[in-house]
Amino acid sequence: MLFSTEEILETIRMITTEHLDIRTVTLGINLQGCASDDVDVVSKRIHDKITSVAGRLVPEADSIESKYGIPIVNKRVAVTPIATLLDSIADDATHAGIKIAKSLDSAAKSVGIDFIGGYSALVHKGFTRGSTALLNSIPKALTETETVCSSVNVASTKSGINMDAVVKMGEIIKSASPKPINCAKLVTFANAPPDNPFMAGAFHGAGEPESVINVGISGPGVIRAVVEQAENVDLGTLAENIKRTAFKIARVGELVGREMASRLGVKFGIIDLSLAPTPTKGDSVANILEAMGLERCGAHGSTAALALLTDAVKKGGAMASSYVGGLSGAFIPVSEDVGMAEAVAEGAINLDKLEAMSSVCSVGLDMVVVPKDTPAETISAIIADECAIGVVNNKVTGVRIIPTGKEGDYVEFGGLLGGSPVLSVRRFSSAKFVRRGGRIPAPIQSLTG
Image 1: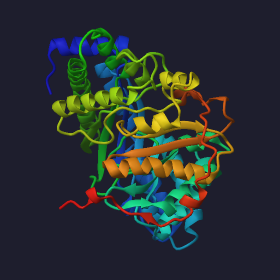
Image 2 (image 1 turned 90 degrees about the vertical axis):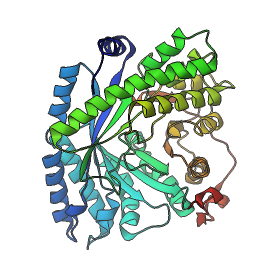
Image 3 (image 1 turned 120 degrees about the vertical axis):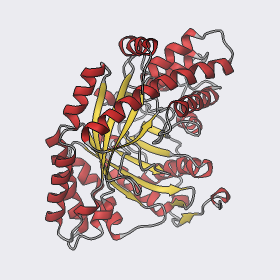
């Protein structure tokens, strides 16, 4: 992959003045070979496999960062969904899950990574012994570890929505919420992709290579600068400008990903084009939409503006690389995006508007803070609504919801998790609906050849 002098100089400008970075390099590792009916054997095999395969991940990433001058913010690992390993455990599988979570945490700390994903289960059509055990263990597993992230896929376009799992996730989130950071490390999915490099939803899915590097690139500041410079152009031209910039960002991401894979002796997987904001001023997706002409993100027109942005980013990335995957679009995590948090504080955004915007963005209701006393059934209903958007539109949707504080409070998480006002939730009950359980059938568009 050759870069012209002009491209190199432009990339330097993007890095130094517009916060361009590689948000994460995530090493996917297959743990299927670690299975055993003895949890102690499984835990040791997992620790040994991760430390062996990922031992050079951080130093090689640091070396590439120095070589190219491109910041690599996070180094992460994603593993085979742990529920599949719990199926073979002979003893109490729930207790075994917690023991394995601690082994994952220990391995992550040993190799110096930020987070490890894959404490996960795929239950969109039903439960196995292992997935039931994993779900039951999630609150304690997250409480007793620091780096472990958990995800549960409860719906897909092909299978519909497993409402029994949705109800269970509402209860799990409530159980985990006394320590709010737990909920920031837990996401509920519809149509979860097997190659997503971003946390908390990363896992090493079926069909992936033995080990693989997936790269998450980001550049909200770069895109915002492009939009601000194109103040007087029409929306079609604006989309073209965004697309061209996304092309350049994707080229940088693939360069880093391929070199990382080569150095580690693993396969190169995909680049995820998602614009991932941070609490840093100027690194906000909400501010991009405002630069398009909205007085405040959340104003009427915000969903259309976000659709334009997401589509243009996808098109630009697809032009730059044949290996685009993961989520790829634009994230709208409330607490992690200073512009989104400000819009919530000013009343421009509420849960309803976030839900509408999630129909066209990368994920869904992300890092949303709701009152501590929100019933579990209401949380389940919020998840069900978001899953319905994903299932019907055949897209990824996810929910990271954090019940803490009371309406009107401002909750600060710190670091990249930022902070957010507590959003209001409708007082009307959804309990009878969600408690029906069963499976909401797959939509008609699932009947493809």
